Every structure is written in C-alpha cells, then in structure tokens.
Length: 463
Image 1 (tube, one colour):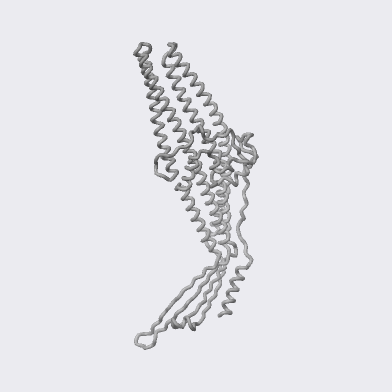
Image 2 (cartoon, helix red, strand yellow):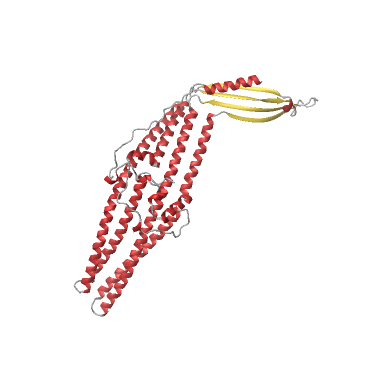
C-alpha cells in the first residue's frame, strides 16, 4: 500500500507541474484622454503639487470641524457599511482562491448485513476509515483567472470604501459651512429686526409730533415684519441643517457644536491643481472603475476556459476491518485512484454565449472606465472655474455691501432733513439687507467650491 500511495502522490505532483497557461486576454489599460493642464487652472496653481496631496485635517483649520469629521468617520453608517462590504469581498477572494487547491475529507463508516431469517449465521459487519481527495488541475488557468478577478473586486471595493470616506468628509465640511452661513444670516436678520424696531419707534414719534406721516409708520412696520420673517425662516433652515449634520455623525437629530464663524474659515486666493496625469492614481472612482475593468477582463478568461478540457483527479485511501477493534490494530488497507478528462462537445451554444457575454461586459467596463476619467477631468475643470469665479463674486459682493451702506446712510439723512419720503429709506434698507445676505452666500459658495476642488482632485479619503 505504501508503494501505491507514494505513486499516487507522485501523479498528483506531476499533474500540478504540467505546463499551464492562462487563457483569455491580459489586462492592458485602454487609451485615455490626456492634457497638460486643466481648463480653469490658474498660473499660480501650475506645477506638480496638488491640493489633494493634503490630508483633510490639514485642509481645515477649524478644530471643531476636524472633530466633527473624526466623529463621522467613526460612526457614520455609510462608511461602516462600505467597510463591511470590503470584508465580504475579501472572504469571497479566499473562497475563490481555494478552488485552485485539492480538497480533502475524512470519514468513518460502519455497515452491517444480516442473513435470511431462520438461518443462524452471524451478520457481516464492516468498519472503515477513509481519506478522500479530489483536485481539478487548473491547466487552462480558469481558477487563476477567477482569483485574478476576485482580487480586482477586492481592490475595487477598497477604493469604493475610500470613495465613501471622501464623500463623507466633503459632506460634513459642506454641511458645516452651510450651517455657519445660516448662523451668520440669522445674526444679520436678528440685528436688522432690532434696528428696524428702533426705526419704527422713531417713526411713530415723528408721526405723533407731526413731523412724519402715518404712511411712514406703516412702511416702517412693513420693514419690521420682513426682517422678522427672514429671522424665522433662517432659524428653521439652521435647525434642519443641524439635524442633517447630526445624522451624518451617526447621532439622532439634535444641536451641533459650532467653531469658527464663516468669515474666519480658510479661503486661499488660489489652489494648486497639479498635473492631470496624477488624477488617475488619486481619485477613488477612477481607481475603482479600473479595477472593475481588470475583473471583467479576467472573467473573459474564465469563460473561455469553460470550453476547454478539464482534468480531474480523485483518490481515496484508508483501512477497513470486520471489527471495530481490529480497525485500529490489524486493519486491511485500501487505495483507490482515478482520473478523468472531460471535453464539452455540444451544449447548444451556451458556453460560446457566455464568452460573448463576458467580452461584452469587459467592453462595457472599458467604456465606463474611460468615461469616468473624462468626467473626472470635467469635475476638476468645473471646480477650478467655480472657485475662481466665486472668489471674484465674493469681492464684488463685498463692494456692493459697502455701497448699500453708504446709500442707506444718505437716505436716512435726506429723510430726517425732510428732503425725501420714508419710501427711499425703506428701499435703501431692503437693499442693504439683501447685500449682507448676498455677501454671506458668496463666501459660502467660495468655501463650497474650495471643498469641491479638493474632492474633484481626489483628496479627502486619506485617514
């Protein structure tokens, strides 16, 4: 038995050492759109450095915001689901890789055969202990290609997890900036309400003394009600924004801690965009799309290998005895070995159709990858243009506010001197409030576009 078992082991080893090949195409990165620089990239931002090279905690100098992002990364459900999904595909990789190896199983069995009734003959009993082995030799690389595809799926899922982290960082920062903008606008509306109430009281006294008219009083009351309405609306939006931010943090809706005011948030005059070629290695969606293409390419080889002959080796060895005690003392040895070579002959075109389907999926993945790169270039260009234009708009809105303040001061002087009606003050007051709100919105848009440039360039997933 020993000689036979060693011979069988040699057969298995020789089969494993047979020349093998991986059928199907090897992955090659398809042609991609290239450019020396991004449209909208300023002269100051030219160079190899990129804003996305910074970690997110280096991008934001608000300690409270950094703490909120850290909390979100620990508690947010979307990020935790993405991490669990990664564990799933890693386990699937292990299961797929195991197909390349032999399978072994062991078993104990007992049987008894009784004779015809009335004949006094002891029943036949049999006890056996067997070790079974089976192995499909991966001659054409079917299992190696499947493992290659599963490994690419793991990488694609890992980049998907990083994309979830990036999205969360951007969402928390953007939501926080919107909340601080609403806080500032709410403060402006509250201050305007108090100022308009003071103006109303002054107008009422002027009307009572005969220096003003009842129409002036009614117009002043209108200003008060407009400011009060703005205050109520902004308070509503701020509370809802708090609920959104709390949910991103993994908490129930409730109040959220604030840090620096909106005007104190970091806003550089220009951002370094870097080179478009580095975008391929940094953006999570591009990396994930490429790994999906790698997986789809490997699956073509799996489908092609299904059409080729398969070599299966099986064997079993063990001991058998008529009594349970003898099974461990003086058993009889048994050995069985077999091999089979199977070639599909006719399946109605099913295997060929599976190859065609795999080819089509690989083509789709290639087109999706190229489209992802193209859209990423557009994202960066749009974000850079948006940041520059919003910076210009911020300066324009700041000048507008100064002009509206001077106009209001002049209108009040003219009204108090009797040179104009209160309608002129009403109009100037409304325009100043609008200008203050517009300045806050312009600063918010500039901050949001700054964060969007960071995301578009592929930053934010580093933890």
